[in-house]
Image 1 (cartoon, rainbow, N blue to C red):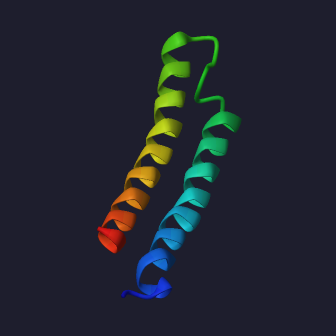
Image 2 (image 1 turned 180 degrees about the horizontal axis):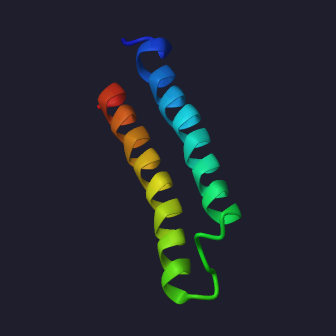
Length: 70
């Protein structure tokens, strides 16, 4: 059975450190007024970007669980 360090620690690092960079990028975009939430298209892509991050995080976690328990 793989250990915590071999399975979940890389996941936590990837989405923890990567999530910090993602969040700082999103904050930077908002503070630079690069996104205009009055435009429907901007709101759409903002939501798609955030959804995409969490979508891949969930898929990655499910694949790790499948590899461990199936």
